[in-house]
Length: 277
Image (cartoon, rainbow, N blue to C red; front, side, top):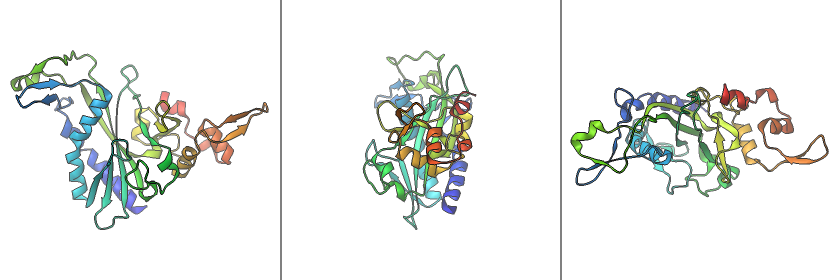
């Protein structure tokens, strides 16, 4: 527990310096596009996947600096769909491992206290079987902590971005940044989880989307603790109960699950309060 507490404190201190690394003085993203060998610059779109990947690349040298300073080895996910994005392994004690997943999302332009949300990894094979190596860099149970290093930003909705146009180097300052106003956070994964899946038919854990609650780790499981998070998502959509009407139904909410397990329902952070306040 001490190792995890120290790691979290250092990682939170580290992210405070990252805005300066990726932003101009007025909060614009310092990445304007990409350049070819003929020194032509091409703008990028504000597509979420593109922005997320470039942000990861932009931040990676800083992650290496953090790891070197704190005596960790950085191990990247071997495959695109592997969890986590980065494993940090203590050089003098390989048993000390932390999972760090990059999470990026944009603010809701109409409700600036909310963001678009994100997924928090799979609740499938490697989550259920803590010794499994399927789609994960190291078995889930070997990590002392699972952290999200997150970035929340504004899309530059008012900007007119012509993706068909190229620019020369001397026009660099005239290129509009597609995103701006970055906000960084570090939080343990379970503290920002919701009780609903994160995307379509895939087995992904969903997040809450109230920005203040995300940055302060006030998700639905934050008062219950990580053991409840693990238990709920290991059994997600698997437990059938009898209703008062005499029919059967699957448990689909955290409150139902805590009641079924005989836990304290008052410790469930209300999803509506978390997301819509």
